Image (cartoon, rainbow, N blue to C red):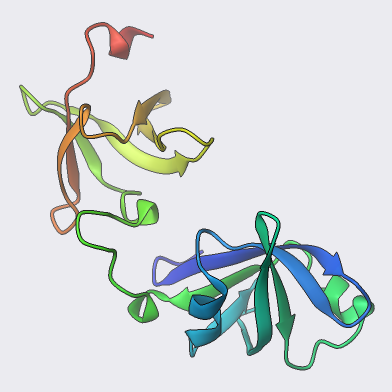
Length: 169
């Protein structure tokens, strides 16, 4: 995925026989999804328009204009619904979009030594874990204020105060 696109939903499977799909919506509300003017489906960069969207259990049900059968909906399985990064609303005050952390250098809070670069983030129901890579070595660093003490998205860095021995795990 090119850095100028943001994933807003991942299509899981068709739902029913009228062309609806079930999607993981990456914490976006139905209203937000419906408000995005430039939805594009990847792979293929196919422009899409939502007819309706509503939450169902812990996922979202989406219906796209022109997708009216279960067979058409099946072709969307595992596709990613994206918006241009420029269409994404700003993060609420004091919060970040986790995908903006990908690519940031992680620096030791005290010494400034580079610990690695954020390759991805993982959400398991607790604090978000930053996958920090240094060569072939991986560290999973919780993105919590007690550890990730400072960050600058424009400067592309995070200053982390790791517990003693954490790097040796």
